[in-house]
Amino acid sequence: MADLGSALPTGSTALSAEDRAGLVNALKDKLQHLAGQQSGFLDSLSPAVKNRVSALQEFQSKHDELEAKFFEERAALEAKYQKLYEPLYTKRFEIVNGITDVESKDEPGNNTSTDENREEEKGVPEFWLTAMKTNEVLSVQITDRDEGALKYLKDIKWCRIDNPKGFKIDFYFDTNPFFKNSVLTKTYHMIDDNEPILERAIGTEIDWYPGKNLTQKLMKKKPKKGAKNAKPVTKTEQCESFFNFFSPPQVPDDDEELDEETAENLQDLMEQDYDIGSTIRDKIIPHAVSWFTGEACQLDELEDVDEEDDEDEEDGDEDEDEDEEDEDDEDEEEEEEDVKPRKSRQPAPKKGSIVQRSGPAGEQPPECKQQ
Image (tube, rainbow, N blue to C red; front, side, top):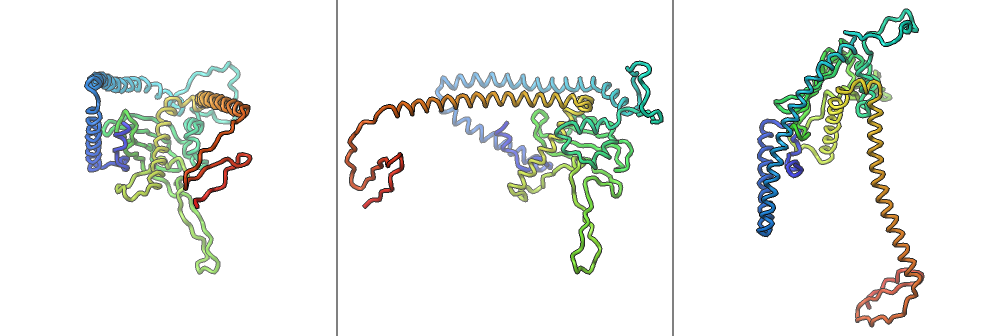
């Protein structure tokens, strides 16, 4: 796959029908090239080794058939359990949004509020906002301004899509003063469902109310001294916001327009965008209450610590090996110092050659020039 991946054009993240045909041709060319290389290599092997390689190829074919069945059964298993999860997600939605309630587990007499006049809270306020802010990947995307809008987030769902392959995430919002949309959707189109090769990402265009666009800010610039127009100049600029998630980076149709640095920056942005989407899909949605309470964050930290410990152990082993090598080197140096050097005659230099001799206190001899 790595070799085939290198055959993909740089702009494979935004493929038109024409580009898709070009991608197929590029893959065919790559396969033919690899087949030619393989043929030349196999011809260089002895008949006995060729026979063994042929047997290995048969085993590989059987492995690939089993792997194909694995992917097929895994997809069916995921679909099966996704249906089993749905009733639980529905119950969660109803409790979070105050549609249904649960019986109190508190003892009688302990339900009195500190503020008797306070209206009873419905559901779990700011459930999704709190869950997302607890996650390390998402917390850095959410600004203070975003929180006002994300408080209206009622539910998040995801599902696979088949044509084209990929998945989509739906964010359901209550009526709010920021935008008119009730659902914001982020869709990821994948080239291969089993290998996470992103073709492109599409987000809902947000219908902001006037002056409520959280992805923009108004900048007022003072006029220069002596300018005829003394009024400050107002300029709209893009700013950091979680809602930029719905305006994903896009690759230009003409790849030649991108220089290397711009292409690398674009690749980083696309990887970051996919990381956010997969975090919401794989972590937040299935384990939302654990992120709300902070338990999931603690488990994540423990996993990170375990990984760091494993790395430290590996580094420690390497350091020990290096220390042992250093000690061996020191021992060898001491042995060499204990042995007195014997005087030996230097062979007579040939005419025009240069003989390097050690200078005092280990200094390098002066440079000799041919006469």
